[in-house]
Image (cartoon, rainbow over all chains, first blue to last red; front, side, top):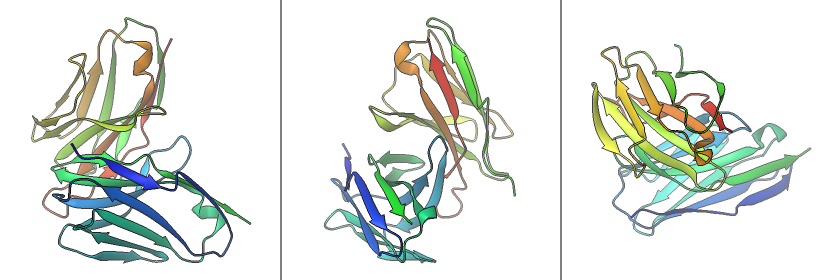
Length: 111
Length: 113
């Protein structure tokens, strides 16, 4: 059974800082890995999708990496802004649309 | 183009009642999946539908069911509601002809009293 762990559970940083969120998974037989953002009381916004054959994806200030062999992914956020405050979720896809989610990292960026 | 639309956004029910939630996927997407989000269990997969067929099912009791229509819209139903069914129910759509990326709606928040 796939298990996804995200560290840290919560993170508070000053504005402008670069930061890294970590995600680990137990079964390396994955189809893809997706990072999401969730604002309080809202749905999930897709940030980055990495296919199992890829090593990283970039979008603006975000960069996500994937190391299947070690079962790890990182989400790097450059020059953080208060608007980046949200919960970040890592999800691993095994087949179809079945994702296994981590518990999330709650990020607070202080002005 | 329009995103994933879920209705209703909020609803309150009492134990023993049943509820139906609706999801309209992004135009052209044929896969719809449902997830339950609770503070204690996090996000858990309920089921997935593709071309009106249930393709995958999570570990939920039979009280949770769903269906998909020919226009790809989907509904999920929960019968004999229990207090523990209070949650945010999220629907996601995907175009499996592309990368498998999931796009989520805003969710339906169900409160069971």
